[in-house]
Image 1 (cartoon, one colour):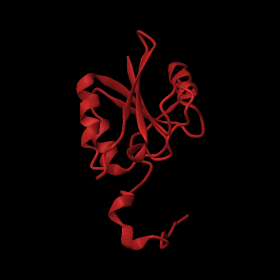
Image 2 (cartoon, one colour):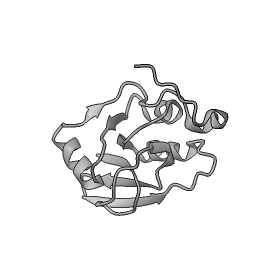
Image 3 (cartoon, rainbow, N blue to C red):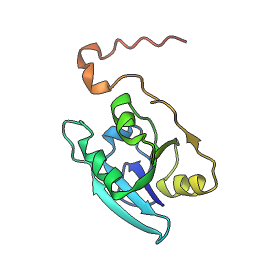
Image 4 (cartoon, rainbow, N blue to C red):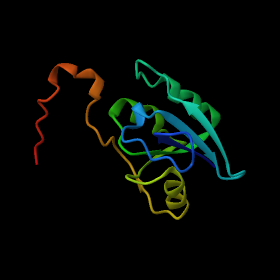
Length: 128
């Protein structure tokens, strides 16, 4: 199975990126061969078009620290699932996924895309 993790760095010991769509790197881990492929996320527009290539590659599991609606829509398909994990390394996340300890997301963790409300910075109202 191919697992993709949004990561701060390019090694298996790197931390999971806080925002999937803004991750510095996307690491693709192959559980069959235990190999890791590193992709730099240089999508300046954050339009997430670069995510579609991973679905074409056959990635079945996406591990995210947070994910907005747009990216979620792209990677949550009939053949792929999105899993939430926070505050751990890429390796730990892969191990947790294998053990079935990660939460499968059914909706994005962030309700709207940050980059679409630059004019509202500092005015985030959280309803508890």
